[in-house]
Structures are given as structure tokens and as C-alpha cells.
Amino acid sequence: MKIGVVLKVLGALFLVLAGFLAFPLLIAAAYDETSALAFGGSMLLTGGLGALLLYLFRRCEADVGHREGFAVAALGWVGSCLLGALPFVFSGEPAFSSITDCVFESTSGFTTTGASILTDIEAIPRGLLFWRSLTHWLGGMGIIALSVALLPLLGVGGMQLFRAEVPGPTADKISPRVAETARLLWTVYVGISALEALLLWLGGMSWFESLCHTFGTMATGGFSTRNTSIAAYDSAYFDTVITIFMVAAGTNFALHYALLRRNWTAYFKDAEWRVYMTLFGGAMLALMLLTWLGGEYDSPWTALRYGAFQSAAILTTTGYATADFEAWGLVVPLAPMILFMFMFIGGCAGSTGGGMKVGRVWLLAKLGAGELYQLVHPRAVRPVKMNGRVVPPEVLRSITRFFILFMGLFALSVVAMSLLGLDFTTAISSVAASIGNIGPGLGNVGPTDNYGWVPMAGKWVLMLDMLLGRLEVYTILVLFVPELWRR
Image (tube, rainbow, N blue to C red; front, side):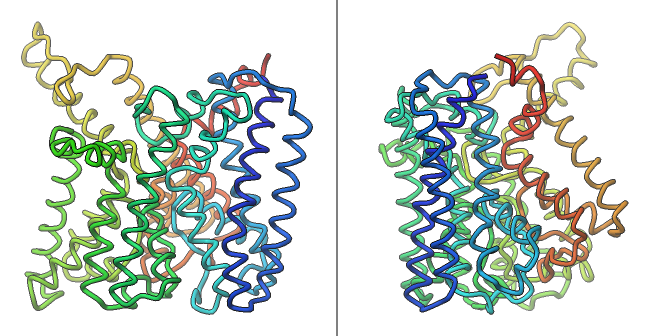
């Protein structure tokens, strides 16, 4: 492990983070809020730390290997979550009187989870609301992926870093140079974000709210500026626009890039995207029928509107809400259970969504079906394929190990939350919503509740789950392997 290289890259990352703090500073200053001072102090500390690390390790010019890549990814996210909490700490707001709550809100933002400790969101200054939404947007594509584009200026490579951070079973390169790959991904990300913000603004949202909700949508995060989330607007137009962009955010961004290159069939040729859309369409229709026939909504079109929105919000792990879907269980118990199962699936590989990813779940299902076929036909050779190509055995083994580890950590976290006094429904759904980076769950952390009441120890358990889920488990756990740190 080349510690100097790791610290140098972290310095660059923290400088980038300090630069983004200028945006909420301007918002706070524009609205004449005292939180501007909090952002100014946070910028100085974050930027000063970054500059210090860059200066001290300026002579380190070795390539980033796989060990350094994992260390930078994990420590970069942890450091960003801690430094990102500074504006909340310095704000003096009563809602952020606890250091734990400040770090929880920041971690939930950067990991695009969207779980909040706030009870009255609309009472929070706009600068702080903008920052918590901006942490979503940065975490969505990956603040580290952004820094990859800067690594050539520092004399270090970045492909190992890119592999460690980009969500999904593999990190396909759009171009041979990883810096160019990062730039292309961010160009697509910024372009789609700008389009959504424009559509929301044209629909009647203020520019401030359109930006905040765009950040939450494209990052599949879920922080809103309203206490009742998107339901506060009661607008079919907003519901439709946000649903479409949530589905887009849960799609592999390489497919969006392919469309820009006029590859009109890229989506339909991708097996994972077809499964993803089948799951979304099936859940949308199922929820429509269940809520309409169950008497929750009078019109099938109204039921379709709410069913589509909540299906997209949970499958893509965005976590926005237009309805109290937990209350649907009082009429049709199957409805919230469908959404609960979606918490474990998530979006496509290469998207900003959380969860285990559609591709992994699909390959696990095909692997299970293949084992059953093998029992009936012991001598048959039936390889697992995806997109017409045989999936290598080592990839299948990796996915199987990931699934076992993911579910094992989920079970341990549920036990921990239960020992802290949470009821079973709340314990299991709070962990599922955290490790899946979703936000709202069931029980006392449902779509109309918050996480402010969770015991302090429970919040730290859930923060660890958020990081494990966002960095796909291994990137965090590898920090505890002694061999990683040996030279």
C-alpha cells in the first residue's frame, strides 16, 4: 500500500468537495441566511485539509494500484461524509444539535439513501436544504469518479479507482482512457439533470426546488424540500416527469451514452435493461390493480399514476413518495410487500441506483434455474448467458459470494437494531432501506416518518449499512484486511 498516493488523491478529492461547498454558500448568501457563515467555515477547513495533503505528498507520482484504489474509494466516501457534515454542525440549527445526526444526514446524502432525521424539513434554511440535495447529486455518479478526471494532472492513474467506485458487477469503460470515461459519464449525467430541472421549472416549480428535486431524482437519492415529499405538489405532471427520470437514473448510463451516439437499439439489446423494465412494468400494473380494485383509488388512472411513481421510487432506490404506501397494506397487504422486495433489487449496473442490482439478481435466478435443470439432466452442459455471451464462472462465483455477504450483513444489522429495541418490522425495513440506499421503509420509518428517533447506536449501524450498500460491501470491508495495508 502506497499511503502517500492515497493521501494525495484524498487531498484532491477534498479540494473538489470544498469547491462544491461554494454553491450552497451562494444560495445562503442570496437568501441572507446565517448558514452562509457555516458554509464559509466548512470550505476553509475542507479546502485547507485538501491543500495540506496535496502539499505534503506532492512528490508521490506512482500509479494507483488495486490496493490504493480500494483505499481511496472507501476513505474518500467516509471522509466526504464526515466533512460534508460540517455545514450542519456549524449551522447552529436545533435540528442538527447532535453530531451523530449531522453525520447521519450527510452520510445519507452522499450514499444517496435519503433517510432523514428531520421532522420539519421546510423550517430548515435553504442553503442547508440545497447542500443536502447537492450531496445526493455528487454521490450519485460518484464524487470519486469526478476526481478520476483530475488524476492525470496529479501524475497518477485511475482505472483501479474507477473499478472500485462505479456501481455494478463490472465497470465497463466507454473509452480506453478512464479520465475520458469519467468525463463522458458526467457529461451525460449533467445533461439529463439539466433537462429534468428545466421540465420541473416549466411545470411551475421554483428554480430552487426544481434543482433540489433534480439532484434527488438523478442520484436516486430522495431528499425533498417538502415535509411530505413529492406528494406536497399533488401534481400529475410532476409525478410523471419525476417517474420518467427516476427510471432513467436507474438505467446503466453507458446505455444513455450509446443513445447519444445514435445507437437506437442499445437499450433493447441489453438483457439487464429488459429485465429492469419488466420488473418496473409488472409492479406498476400490479400496484394499479391492487389499489384500484381494493378501493384505495376510485380511478384506474389515478391508481396507475401512484403505482408507477412508487414502483420507480423503490426499484431505483430513489425513495420519493407521493402516497403513504405503507397504508396500502391496510387494504391490500400484498402492495407494500411488492415494494419491500424491490428494496433488495435496485437499479441496473452502471446506474446511480442502489440495491444488489438487477443484473446480479437476474444472473442468480438463471444460476438457480440452471442447477435445477442439472438435477434433471446430470450430463447436460448449460452455461449461464447474458446478452448472448457466456458469463465466466469466476463472475458467477463473485456474484454468489456477494449475495451471501450482502444478506449476511443484512441479517446481522437486523439483529443489532432489534437488540436496540426496534420492533421487527421497523428493524428489518430500516436496514433494508439503508443497505439498499432507499430511505423510507415500513413501520416507524415509513414514508411519512423519519429516523430522528432512532437510538444513537442504531444510527451508526444504519450509516455503516449505507456505506456498505453504496460501495457494494467489499470496498468497505477490505479496509479491515491487514494485507491491504502492507507494503
